[in-house]
View 1 (tube, rainbow, N blue to C red):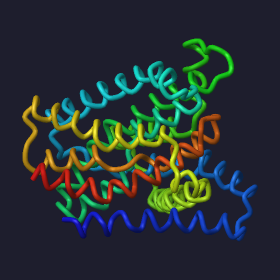
View 2 (spheres, one colour):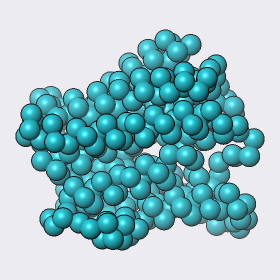
View 3 (cartoon, one colour):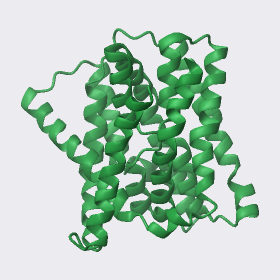
View 4 (cartoon, rainbow, N blue to C red):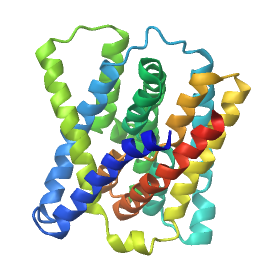
Length: 309
C-alpha cells in the first residue's frame, strides 16, 4: 500500500521540482511563465476537465449512498471553511486575497492523483468509484471556488448578478458543464476530435504542475507562513474525518469506503494556482500550501487507507 501511494505521488512532486528548477535557472525566464499560465487557464485546464468528464463511465455505478455521503461532507466542509473567514482575519491577520487561497486549497482535490492510486489498488472498479466522485464534485467545486474567488478578490462589493457573470466567464466552468452534458446526453464525439482533447488535456496536467513549481518560493517551504498549516489541516485531516463520518451515516463500506476516503485525503488541485494568479488571489500561498500538501499526503494517505481497511 505504502509503495503504491509513494509511486503515484512521486512523479507529481518531481514535475513540480522541474518547474522550480526551470525558473531558478532562468531556462524559462520568470516573465514568460505568465503566458504559460494564461495558456493553461484559457485552454489546457478547461479541455482537461471536459475530456475527463466525457470519458467517465457512469452508467454502471450505483449513485446512491456514495453520492449522498460525499456531497453532504463537501457541503459541510465548504460552509465550515467559509465561516473561518472572520476568525482567521482576526487571529492571524489573513486578508481576503490570502483567504481565497486558504479556501481553494482546503476544498479542491487532485482527482488525477486519486485516479492513479485507485487504478493500482482496485482496477476498473476503483476507477469507476473515483470517476463518480469526480462527476459529482468537479463542476460543483469549481463553481463554488470561482464564486468565492470573485467575492474575495473584488475591489468592490460584488452583487449576486456580477458574481454569477464573473463565474460564467471562467473557462473551467464551461469545460466542466460541457463534459457533463456530453456524457449524460451520450453525445457522440468524432474520434480524432477526442484524441485532440486527450493530447491537450495531458499537456494541461503537465504544464499545470510545472507552473506550480515555477511559482514556488523555496523560502516559503523552508520557513512556511503560519497560514499554510490551515490549508493542510483542513484538507488532509478535517475533510477526511467529515467524509468518514458521512459515509458511516449512509452505510458506505468496503471498497466504496476506501475509494471515497482516497478522494478525500489527496492533496489539492494544482490548477487552482493559475486561478489564483488570474483572479488576483494569493498565488504564493497557494503554491506553498499545494506543494506541502503533496509531501504530507505521501504519509497521510497510506495511514488513512490502512485505518479504513
